Amino acid sequence: MDRVLVTGGAGFIGSHLVDRLVEEGYNVRVLDNFDPQVHHGTKPSYLNKHAEYQEGDIRDEAALKKALGGIDYIYHFAAKVGVGQSMYEIKDYVSVNTFGTAVLWDHIVNQKVRVKKIVVASSMSIYGEGAYRCVSCGDQTPHLRAEESLKQKQWDLECPSCRKRLDNIPTAETKKLLATSIYAISKKDQEEISLILGRSYALPTVALRFFNVYGKRQSLSNPYTGACAIFSSRIKNDNPPLIYEDGLQTRDFIDVRDIVEANLLVLKDRRADYRALNVGTGIPNSIHEVAETLIRLYGKTFKPEIVHRFRAGDIRHCYADVTRLKELGFKPRYSLESGLRDLVAWGKTEEAVDTVAEADKTLEKYRLKI
Image: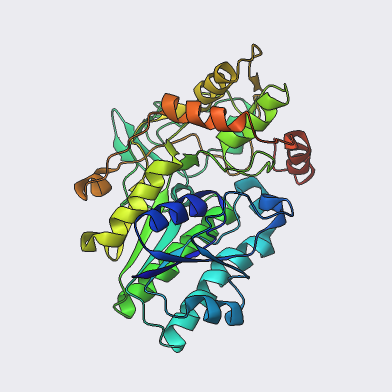
């Protein structure tokens, strides 16, 4: 029976993956530090009783040595998440994400750990803005929007040549990476460290660029997690979701169950080796639409609060071109409506401490909200 190590396997996405790996017949070990911001001082009740759990830090070589013993495959999911928080907890994000990945690979290389494949969790955030096209000038790769335009509430991007409004198009893996946050830079580091060393040592490695993941087990009391969980926390506490800009910015929301299937697919398919692959639905949805849907599903009657302000590093549009992954047989199974319905059914039974306002004030304190 093959043995699989999942770093960060007690977290939101990692725990779902652990369940499926166990279901598939793998012998699963988890290395996780049970971060209090995510787990609030208690180990989650959803931990799979058929998996082995080892509490430890990805940066601790002794913990790694113990976790890697007898392992055939590695899923590297251990990471500190949250775009806004990364802009002031800079050292921690770089330490956990970048340095933690370096420690993992340093141990594999220098201790000659023999594994068959490594799958690393990357992120759509490494793209920065998504891909765009001008009807007159063709494809464009914009950087961050100008602060002066944003202060005037000009949210959409313009062609730098003809000044026409740009149309967003699916973002392919070939797009230039223009990270706009410390979190994004650290995820880019995780991906590039892994792919470079994987190729150099002929150790099959895959980087999966997750788009906006939502689903059960996403912490409803962590104000730095995904939009769906943050909105759910506000709604459950009878507070309207806070939406920046005009709410028409779009993202590619994908159910965690589809993310898990993509991970299983690339583990088994050699065609994925040494590649970076988008994992999304290929469908853009506005932030406002997501907030309205969650409000309706929770049975509330208020409206989202659109603040018409922006946060440093925020992008306007980004959704996935999933051509490469579909060529390997991937097909998302969950629509946004059905996935959010399942999220809400679970969320109604979960505790949700709404600390969004406090997190918002912290951004303002650091002048990251304008």
